[in-house]
Structure formats: C-alpha cells, structure tokens
Image 1 (cartoon, rainbow, N blue to C red):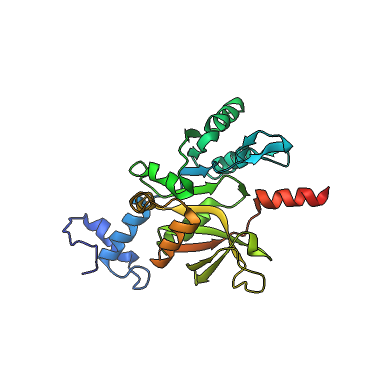
Image 2 (tube, rainbow, N blue to C red):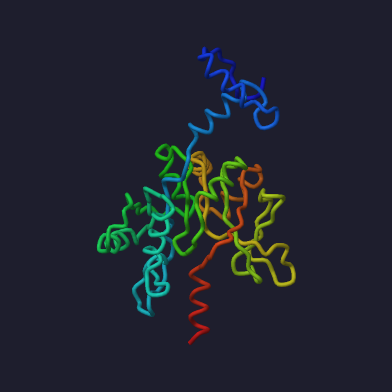
Length: 274
C-alpha cells in the first residue's frame, strides 16, 4: 500500500458508482479508488490563495531626499507609494487578507493606508522585526493554508492563480518567483535542475556568472514553513531558510513572464533620466 494512505470501506449509490466507473480511462484515472481520490482532491483542496504577507520592515530608506527614514514600501513609483500599488494588485488577484510585517514602520504604514480609500482587504499589522524569515515564526499555528509572501519593495503584475497551480503541481514547501537580469551581481542568482532550485549564488563576481535567474521577491509557502523557521531559529529567507529547503529538495522556481520592478532598479532608472 502507498505511503501515507489508509484503506477504508465505503458504501456508494449504484448510479454514482457507475458514473465513477465511466471516468476510468486507465491513464489519468486508473481505477475506482483513484477516481474517488481524484475527485475528492479536486473539490476539497485549496482552490486559491486568500492570504498575503508583506515584508515592509528592514532598514528603510530616506524618502525624497529628506532625513526621515521610512519603509521601502512607502517609496513612490510613478507618483504612487509602492504599498498602494501592491494592495491593488493583491485585491485584483483575489487576495482577501493581508498581514503587513513592518517593524518600526508599522504605525506609519497603518496611518497611511487608513487615510486612503478602503482597499477592500482585511489588513493587520505586525511590529516584530526578527529578520525576513524570523517574522514568519509569528504565523506558526495561525496559518492553515498556502499563502503568498511578498517583499515590500517589489512591484509585479503576476497572476497568482497561475503561480499557485505551478506550486501545487510540484508539491514543494516553497516556490520562489524568478526573473532574469543581464547582470545579476547586485541580486545573487539561482541555479535550477528542471523546476527544482538546487543552489543560490550570492552576488557572483563578473565572469563567473552561472545563472542569470534572480529572486523576484515573491513566494508561495506552505504553513509548515512557519514551523520550520521557528524550530530552527532562522532569521533570513535568502541566507538561512531557502538554502535549507534547497538541500531538502523542497523549493522550486517559477519564472515570471509579467512586468516586474524592484525599488533599486527604479531608483537607478530615475537617476539615469535626470
């Protein structure tokens, strides 16, 4: 018997059983047990991503040349704060609840969001500042489904349902969204074997670039990741958690084919235009 499966006895209506038998094709659905399992999974499994976590803390930046330090998520992109654009994207993609980890910037971000038009999302704020991975330990036990985690300094038009389908198909604990750069030295690069991530290369030297794929700062995660972080005491996603999941073969890479912007890239573009 297959691992993690149990034998049960059930009684079904004869007409229902006949309908199930007609679905058996010997390829996609091989027998009655497989037919029942297939349709239970199809109808009972999580159908979409409902919860998003935004990492908006960190060291912050100097906004508009002023001395006041603020979250990168509050920096403006094309005349609008990144956090506003991000919330609109998440709402458009079917997200219902957002948890914002903003450390010392929590009150400022909360005040800003509440002063704007209601984004139509249930939003909560966490002031903990335990590193990008450390923040996830506060979700242990509270997160009961796959969720999306987004760095607070990126913008993207990705279709979350498409990423979720990829994530479910591969069955990993985490899926990292990737994009490519001609010069990945400022970001670090990712090595793949098929869809599985096998290595992370931090800021490779010129002439030694093995991959032009970079971390796009958007992730799909299983709830168990929150327990892993808490148990192991990880603080950094990039330096601690992701390499550990890679060694276990539980992390995959999804290539974004949609528009993607990073705050650093935006600043460089603006400087070049001046």
